[in-house]
Image 1 (cartoon, rainbow, N blue to C red):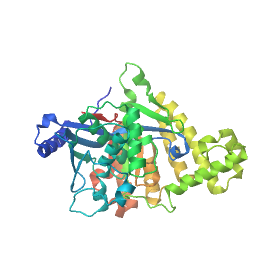
Image 2 (image 1 turned 135 degrees about the horizontal axis):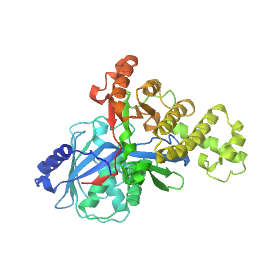
Image 3 (image 1 turned 90 degrees about the horizontal axis):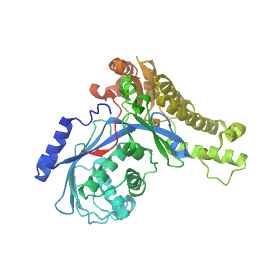
Image 4 (image 1 turned 90 degrees about the vertical axis):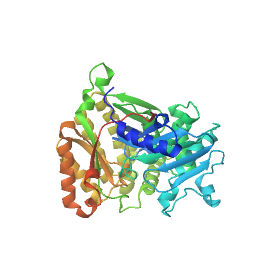
Length: 437
C-alpha cells in the first residue's frame, strides 16, 4: 500500500543492538514498537468544543526496542535523556499528584533537570492504565526508547506517541491482545489521570487508528471516527495522490511559543463563555456550554450578542468545523489544491479569530504560503508551540524547504541560529499506525 520507509532497517538495528547490550540477549529477540507522530491538517482548536477534526501520522516518531524480562523488573534507557529507570511491575503505580505527595523516586539520574527526572512517568503511567483496567502483568520489559531528533516539543503529539509505545510493549511482553479503541482509552488514562494533563483523545486516536494514505476524521463530541481514503486507494490503481505531496515541518526555534495572550486555557474558557451566551439566547441553556451544542442557525441568529472577543472565537469554531467537512470531501476526491487552500484558511483564522501564535510563528506561516509548490500551511501544536506544517508538491519539496529556511533566517536570524540546518525544515511522508515490529 505504498512504500513505507519508516523505520529504516538501520534505525531498527541501532535500537536492537542497544537492547541486546542491555539485556544480554540476541538482537534477533528484540522487538521494536514504532509509534508515529501525528499532524492535524484541519480542525484547529475545536476538539475541546466537540468539533470534527482530521489527523494523519507521519514517517517519524518514537522507537521503543524491548525484550520481556525474565521476572517482574522494568529497566529503561533513553536516547534523549540521562539516567535509567528501574522498578518492578508489582509496585503499585500512583497518579503523579499522589506520587509526589509520597515523594516517590522516578528516574535514577546524575542530572537534576526536571525534564530528565520525569521522562520515566510515561512507562509508569502505562503500567497504571493497564493495571487499572484489570490486566495482570507478569513480565516487565528491558527497553531502549528514542524519539526523532528535535521533535519532542514541537506539537506533534510526542507524549501520546510515547504512552502508546509503552502500552504496546507491555502488552506484547505479556501476550495481551488489546484493541486499538481500548488502547486509546488506556493512553487517555496515562495522560489525564496519571499525568494530570487536560487533553482530548485525538492524538492517541490518530496514532493507533491511522492507515497509510488515509485521513483519520474524528467527531470529538461522539468519539466516532472514520478513515477517509484518497480515490486511488479505493481502487487497485497506483496511489497517485500520495506521490503528489510531501509534508513539511518548519521550525521557528521556539520551544514554547511566547504568545502575547495567556494562552490555551483562556481560549477554552472563552469558547465556553461564547457557547453559554448562544445557548441561553436560543433557549437551550440546559445543554453543556460547548460550541458543538450550538446549532449553526442559532449561531447565525444570535452571534451579534457576543462581545468582539467572544465573537472571534465562535467565528473560528463554526468556520473551522465547516472547513474540516469540505476538506474531507477534497481529500476523498483527490483535490489537493482545494485541500491545501482550506489548510491555509485554517491558519489565517487561527491567527485572526482564535488569536494564537506569535510573531515568529506568524512570519513562518506567511513565508510558507509563498514557497514554491505550496498547497497549504498552518501552525502545528495549536499555535502555542514553535512549528508549522505544510503540504507541498512532492517535486518542489526540496526547493520549498530551502526557500523557507533562507527567508526565515533573514527575518529571525537569532531564532534560526538555534536550529541546526538539517532540522530547520523537515520533509516527511504520510505514515501508518503504531505497531510492533
